[in-house]
Length: 408
Image (cartoon, rainbow, N blue to C red; front, side, top):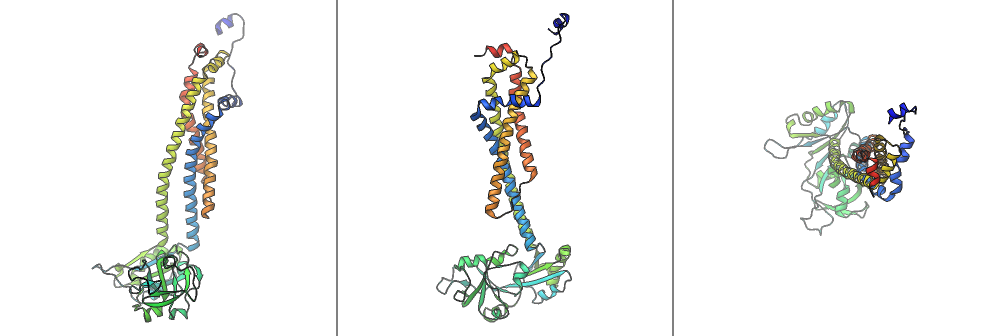
């Protein structure tokens, strides 16, 4: 035809080019004419993206809360505890262990607690002896709360006077198990067969969770009334952050020079980090579930586009008859698929962001949504839209005008 036109003196015909605005308008035709179908298809994409962003955002917010907690409590706490002898029996640290650790240069603070194994705790004398509720009794130094970062929910901590009298401070879980809501002069518990007045109740202690299920009494009263042998079972040590590992390497030998192998040294903040690592592993599983949901949404988009091509054969034939090229037909349906996926992706980002912020606000966490999660989610939706729309677009472009117009 071009050769005939050229011999006849007519100008050569060239197909019109579609600008970006034209592509968007033409691609949006199918979405405007079938809004309910477009909404349901976009919803499948949105659910997958919202699940992925929500999981990543909640996990990141939890990690930010952990970092904030550790920053407030300090990551320079080391715990030195009695281990076992070579024969498998419980070991004992020397009475002088606390004083010896204090001589280490970078050590900033040391406090001790000693377990009083024979002193069982009950709410009253009427409670059966077998119902101990798993509560342990510890003799505690006066500077223990400052060293481990413990705070009081009710009452006061032991002081120079009350440590010599039957006064006790309950850990948060111990208070709950004993049915003690608050400290007071009329609130008493039975420790080792003797009544102790509850002068304080602790908040949960993240870096020393063994104190949560403990009843803490003064060192002198424990030795005088509860048959405490005076040996510390746990030493809490604060050291300079920059020299923490150096201090950690010498703690066992310093605490028990004769048998350093009978001493265990740990870093409580590592346990919290391990919990976060476990949470991140679970996050990976949930991300997989979100990816499956996203894949299902992509299949829904592909299905919608295939049906759209079948229903719009006459439209395709008419456009081809008016001069639209195969490339322009492909571009139209590919743009429609991308728009559909982009709408779902944008809705998913908004939904996932809202869920993350709402949950973080409910938990009292800082809301953190990584930029890579949002950008990655949108990129994933566009990639899925391109893949889902490619086959229907190619199929539509291959229809000849006569074949398409002949379809009823």
